[in-house]
Image (cartoon, rainbow, N blue to C red):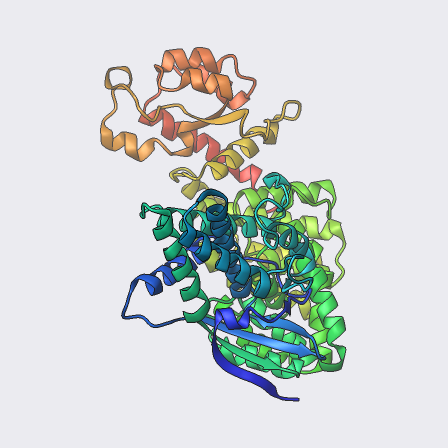
Length: 562
């Protein structure tokens, strides 16, 4: 078991071999910025006579048996390179179908034949498939990238998965860039000549470091060594390969757990998930130090199997925390609270809920803790101005205490949260003067204040139907409102100057005089908006007075002691 091939090669030489992407690898993930860098690097190489080659990156291969070459590192580079070759072929076929210039036809025919024979499957030449992607992407790749123009699958973009859409976008982008670049030349023969030269430059002088081994464990070690700094690579990829390497004779179990977990969390940041789970049972670690921390502690087969199983076990829980509107994991009251926390962009509390789930807490207990977290976040962060990161370490400490059974029940956990929560006096003082600009937060606060005492009529949660209304408008006419610029800037986003209004009424009120606004407010079914009709004026003092009234109510809506 050893390295059987190691060399620096032009991408064209590498792409003459056949490869497979193992199922446990993530799907195609390059977005526009990465594909744009790929194109820019290539064009710089093509245009700059002082540049002889460009280093595209490394490709690490595990050769399984006599044939199968599994890509351990370099999937994105290999896939994008083949997408680019398809773009060259497409442009060459356009010349074959449109030009009568003999030389242009000759250039184009050579490109098409080279791509079809050596790099992409085409039944006319070879039955061999040059690249097999994972299950999520392979069917689309084989039907949209591999065939020639005219034989490609018809695409309905809205039906594509997230990774399929990225493949489609990369193909469209590279085709467009080639088209625009060649359009600077007038004659077909000149365009075809440049296309051929660009094609030749790409195959020969875009260089990769190619490493092939027949030992999977060795492939993982090489992968980790080459990516030790984690640059241009997600921490989750490094962790995945570490778990696979450590898994040894039980690697298939680890692969299976990882693949199922990744599928459950498709489109969700896996590194964030792993960190929140890790912080639920271990001392707090930042994202940058996560890989080294886990690597130092997960170093036996059993460790690898246990962590991968735990990641799978809690994946649906995490999806429910991140996307509560889409998941029916919890009962309705808990889901409603999670949606509110999501509206507040709250995430740092995740380790607490993960720790509770690991300790098999009942949903009712989780619901009590979530309500205490909501109160803490509103009092300390939303109104108090504390940064969410300040609380992150505190939440992690509580999670660790739960995992160690130092906090034995929901009441103990709530008591710990209350120790961090601002008092009524502090909350009220902050509430009376705070300014809020984030629309989701404004809607949340006003909706909760309105719904607290209004039991029969609840505020519609559809943001398209209920809008934020600035009582003193954003663009007041000086004669109508008589307010100086400094006061307008200071008080416009005070909560006391904000209310909720239906879409059509909001448009009607807009920048109208206060008397006209009151006529519109009187038709609203939202009681806090109707209340405004009792005011004869709307001045700075009126805003301050209303915000103090809301502060007194807020103490009851978000109670520290309940």
